[in-house]
Amino acid sequence: MDFRHEWKHEINFSDMIAIRQRLRAVAKPDPHAVDGSYFIRSLYFDNLSDKALREKIDGVNCREKFRIRYYDHDPSLIHLEKKSKWNGLGNKQSAVLTAQEAQAIVDGELDWMLDSGRPLVQELYSKMQTQGLRPKTIVDYTREPFVYGPGNVRVTLDYDIRTGLNCTDFLNPDCVTIPAGNEPIILEVKWDEYLPSVIRDAVQLNGRRTSAFSKYAICRIYG
Image 1 (cartoon, helix red, strand yellow):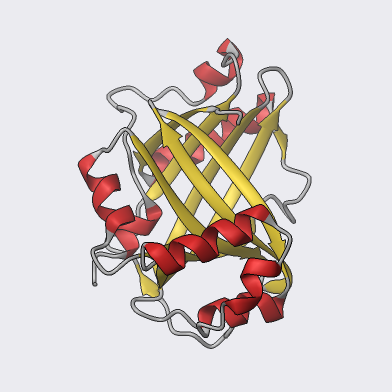
Image 2 (tube, one colour; image 1 turned 120 degrees about the horizontal axis):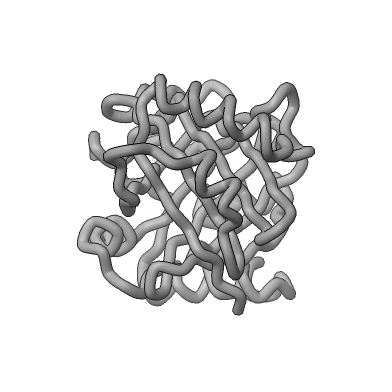
């Protein structure tokens, strides 16, 4: 399992404008972005005791969370993802779902998962059965992604974060979402073995510290 380094900063609008301009000068936009950005909808899982949320808030050193995600309002490609954290390093595992499979999970129709032939789908099934994981809330936001080859660096600016409250109707485009808290802007920087100085300088902000900010956590502010 490969782990990557990760920084997160909560920034303001002026910070975002400055960092965006610097990144455009030294990095490339992610080729998947249309006009420099894309929309993300995620459905996060948790159990009745909010294990994933509490471990995040408490800063537990080794933790994981599951989510289902698609992009730009297009459910033709959906991913099941497991994000793991260990000693401040991050790892993401992924498996493709069909829209029908994603809807079945939302509806609690799970028997097919055990025979899916996809280890990550089978793992989610096991933890839904043994830990009581269930779809918890929808998280929507817009992302501006940049990439830089050396160090396999990926820098993202995430904003317009919205919560689906208790709505888990993941594939329903009419599912009502509302702004999450004070709608923070999140700068994320991820890299493999080293972070090139040109990127380090581009994302440098005086008086800012890395944080364990979680879009899932902020979207649970209302329940």
